Image (tube, one colour):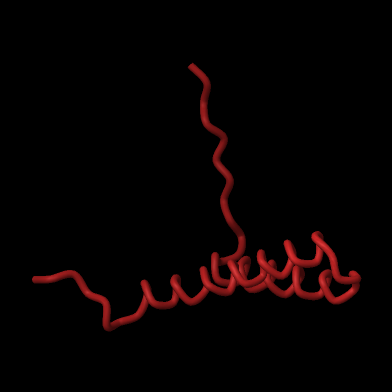
Length: 66
């Protein structure tokens, strides 16, 4: 049976998503309009949406019913 490799993350999900969004936007700024640039901007928007969702899920107002 194959064993699954485990990887311990050194940074939080929030940090990784923010870094990825910033990197994509920075790379898109250097490109001329085209498919690659649109894909990078789309990826940046997806990362920013994931950041907002993650913050919403961790908010103190969201609690399990008791």
